[in-house]
Image 1 (cartoon, one colour):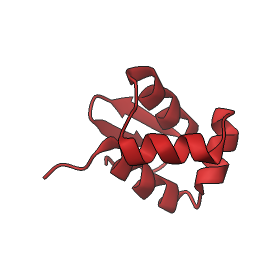
Image 2 (cartoon, helix red, strand yellow):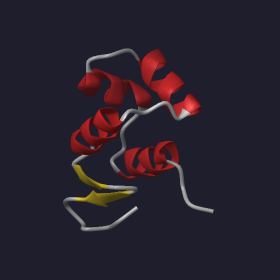
Image 3 (spheres, one colour):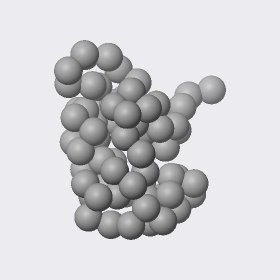
Length: 73
């Protein structure tokens, strides 16, 4: 079964040593808002592109590619 976008974000956040608070600060929103989006999987296409960029990744359809390592998740 393929990973959801939220699961991919959690993996990358772990590798980047980033918390929900850290991502929320970068997004200019609250931890609660990020947490709600993650739990509901409620991401627009723009959200996915923006979050990928904030995590130093390229959003390539369903795949996130880490810019520093080239790893695809």
